[in-house]
Image (cartoon, rainbow, N blue to C red):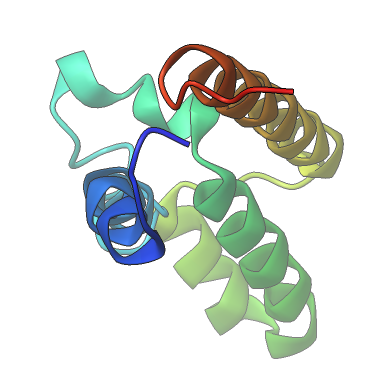
Amino acid sequence: AVAPDAHQALTMALPFLVVFMLFNGVIVTRATAPFFLRWVFEICPNFYAMQALAVRMAKDAGPMGQMIVDGLGYEDGQQTTGIAVILTLTVVTRAFTCLAMKFLNNLKR
């Protein structure tokens, strides 16, 4: 709603997508992230998705899988938090979209 076309909207979204991809817990883990950026993990939907997948797959992989999960700092039982984060981000981005459409694009009825 801020961008005049789809190509510019994708370009404007790219920094947010890059941050979420970097902080998925594989590329940058909680242990390796600078202390002032550790809060990003709490709002990153990719982190919760990767954590849920890795923990589930580690159960089938035995001790080696659990060692990898422990090394990445993933925890079991975070699925509800992940769903809450995704739903919250969806609502917030929809609200910002509505506000941007109303105040930035001069939509008329």
